Image 1 (spheres, rainbow, N blue to C red):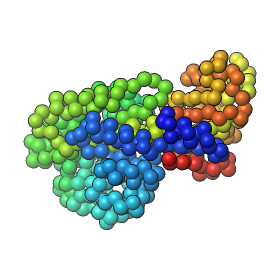
Image 2 (cartoon, rainbow, N blue to C red; image 1 turned 30 degrees about the vertical axis):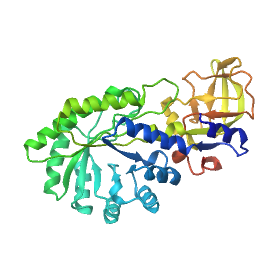
Image 3 (cartoon, one colour; image 1 turned 30 degrees about the horizontal axis):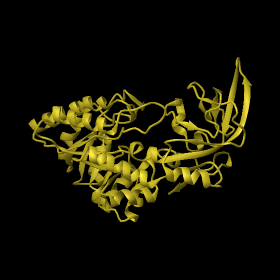
Image 4 (spheres, rainbow, N blue to C red; image 1 turned 90 degrees about the vertical axis):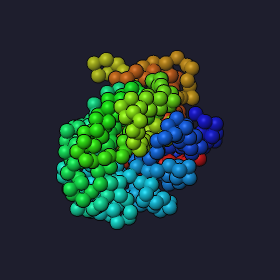
Length: 376
């Protein structure tokens, strides 16, 4: 945790729960990724945390932006970011939204199905399009292998058809899974992309772009390889499969860019022993799945939790949220030893919570206000 975050948390009297994010850490992380991958254009995945301050700070550093909605596009444009620095990377779009984006000047769109390609042809004629491949998502804590992407043979057919539709077949994208813990997982997807480049070139279609997607991780419970290791693995795969004919490359970090810059402070609301076949200690917080922690579904994302009583004797605890919903349990099967001396009213911190928390929080479930965010 940075000194700025420590000072804010020690001095604050803000009502919990809240997220505080150190903007300097975001900027530093951008520099680290860019230095590791100097030949790759960085497109920040706005959905991870769409705070104006984050977008503006990254824009000043030369970052481009991966948007998933018209609202995200408009947020970028209000900050003076041109359409030429945006990619509409969502593969599920209303045709009216495609038309709005095209009218605003965006000409780089993702797709992964025939129906989406046809919408693009009608609503964004002449645009550059790239097709998203499906991946297995192995090695990731949050796979994206069911709802998005298509197989290689389908991608080849669709990119061939796109030219006849009046679009410009531009490239290939994929996503190896969010919170990807294995740098080698990019290799198979890059190999597929390179094979597609060659197959389409033989048929008269020259692609130019490989979108390497997201996947760079934040630091939760488990140790991770360094950013340098990820960069080395990605570039080694690119050189292995593309040789001297390297395409333009973009990367779409979200979690890996802003995750470690944020901390959620939350209050212990209740500590109780429950006897459901066996006695278990339950610790209830004033934030839960619906207040900004939906990525604890399936206990997929395992946040580090620190308390003011760390160092004292601990015991296994089930951690739950405050709502009257039975599903609002954060960690039941993942071991979370918390201090026995922990008390109701203690404030504890959820670390590396800068991504997919504030932007995920429900509007008013149980009358609980959305998670507040402080940018420092």
